[in-house]
Image 1 (cartoon, rainbow, N blue to C red):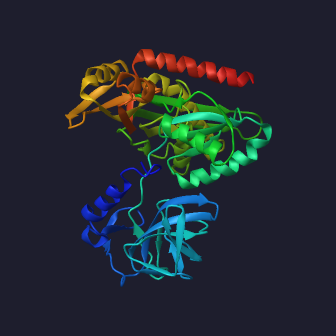
Image 2 (cartoon, helix red, strand yellow):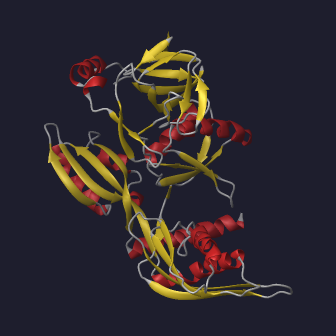
Image 3 (cartoon, one colour):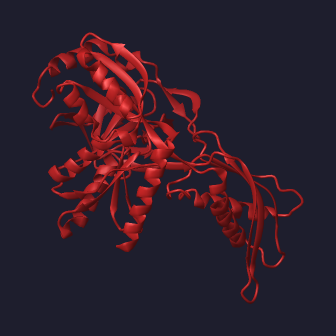
Length: 440
């Protein structure tokens, strides 16, 4: 619509007529260092100390643009402002008001304005900018963890550096897009919120930055967890001339609350495991959470309690207890009913009424759980929770079923245990992938 300028004037008029002015909405709450509301608010007034939120970073031919919404106070060209997240100050060189490709140079801006500041160095999306004499933090933006990844490499050998620079700029612009290098294969892995998200990134790399990529198959971000509580013991003993290594731990491992990650407690009494070695035991267990025993996926929601153990006055050390904890993890997780978890997406489908049956049938075939169905004037909106692994290529199927009139959006919802058949197939495929990688 924007590209062809169809209906844009009506939308802009509606924004002016119907949406509230900055002074008509509840003021933004301020946060303390832990991220909790502190009871104060960013009052929309030019007389207050300066407070603003950087909500978008964009790289264009003139350099980095930081889009800023000013909540309180005034900002003048040449002012020095504080980034509350990094604790560093920066000087405002140029401020512009953006109108599509045009920009209007500004010398000052005030509460309620949305402007772009040119050439800021250390600012990222979601950072608070404020008056150095009155440091504050606005409510931060929350970005979900990526749920899908693809391996990419440039088509021509010399494209690596160009790709690295381009991806660096794109990561700064979009915090839900992440990049990492696989240590074993050296491949570049792009991670995002869905198939379409990554397709767009690959297209931007090609059109904007001139980097042609060879793209691998999408990989779903599975996780692992445990289903049973177990009590176990592990002893690490090593003797090789001189002082050896010794660490014995007795522990309980049990499933944690959903989204609790890893929690460690110690109830050792009587000094069987001296207090100074407890952090080493925790570190050992925690370091193993990145790689589960089923297929090497990260482990979620596990509680470990150290309740007893043994040590040797000479041979025991922090490193011995850390190695003991790592061995204990490998020994006990399989006994605790290791289970594969898959990401579930919140899917919102819009379809004309004649095709509702087909769309619902297709979602059921994809192991979807319908949560809601609303009839509107122009069609029906269907909401469902569907495993991400079943959503590849969905836009093509939906367009075929609805003669091109269906639309959908999806976002990550939560992790759920996989059915056994799916789990077995995923574990088998992952083992084959690791074996193929090892041969390279």
